[in-house]
Length: 232
Image (cartoon, rainbow, N blue to C red; front, side, top):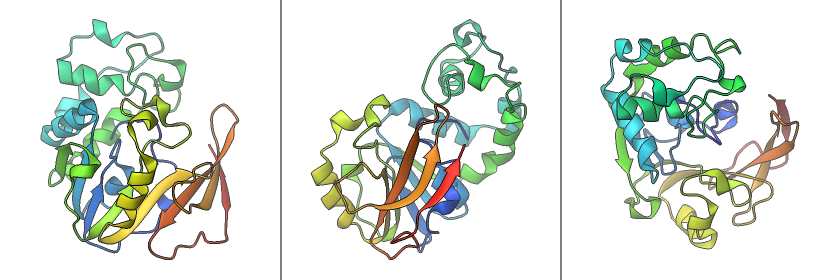
């Protein structure tokens, strides 16, 4: 529904499907896994209040509330637009590729293949009407039987988040992940060592730097010995 740094929008199809009707995303961000399986009983949680405020606002929106937003062009300043506070927070995720900002970058200019952005969001609003959206910390969640899709700020590279790597004790997070009831899917890259992560897919980012996404699960996956490649 909105861009966010570290989003799984390009690779969500590579993760195992949920084995439970209930899905919980404790580090929700843009919640791409939950959006893929939106018909499920979804709970998303994030410690960054702006993220949760935007999700709750979107949950109450009608298509007309989204379709009114202007075409984004490089150099536009959202602080000069006639917007409410929550609308401005929402827009801040779009102007700089998921890192909250005020000035539209060239990458997010609508002429750069993003002409239908508002239409796509408006068409998907119905998917989140039944979701449970929580502002909070992963440690406070009840240990329910569910598919847990856990995508925390990465051990190496997660410093860009509002509540990033410096806020996480990865040893404690590892024990918490292993203690969850149900199916557990944890996202990281191969630099991480706080769980026994398996290489999943190689990504070439916009700056031509390669990273390898990795996965840990308490269920067997297809990535025990296979690595795929993807460029975007």
